[in-house]
Amino acid sequence: MNNKKKMFNIIMIVVAMMIGFYIYFSSEDREQYLSDEKNIGFAIGEIIDFEIGSRVPPWFTYIFNSGKGVTEGSYDLYDSLRNASMTYQKSFIGRKFLVKFSKEKPKYNEMYLDRPIPDSLMNCSDCVWSKPPF
Image (cartoon, one colour):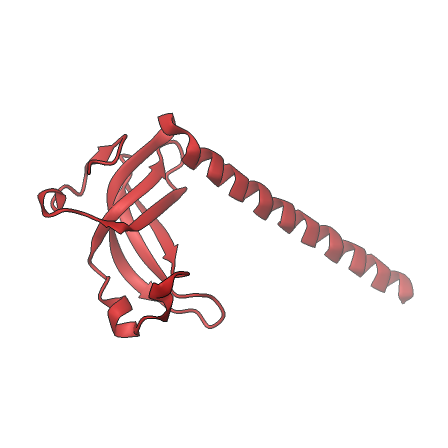
């Protein structure tokens, strides 16, 4: 009985280490793709949803056109917006902001809530730029 418990503990430790390595290397991979200036694109993203988790900060879900089709991303609310009223947070649904993404792997992306889209570019949902257009 004691051997089974030891074996179970060893398996759990190995699985935990593998998960840790995966998380570490995938975040490093993301940073590498988003720091390569030749592989970066900018597009207009639209917030389509707002969700609240029980043990995680609230987040926005957004979509943007990466040139390879529509891609979905999420933006966790860690800043002062996290403490704002839910009505104010939900008012962001439908707003458009600048999104930076990897052209090679569009799943690596970042939305800039501090860069709202000017009126002149509001209808340019299929536009992709290699540098921010404004």
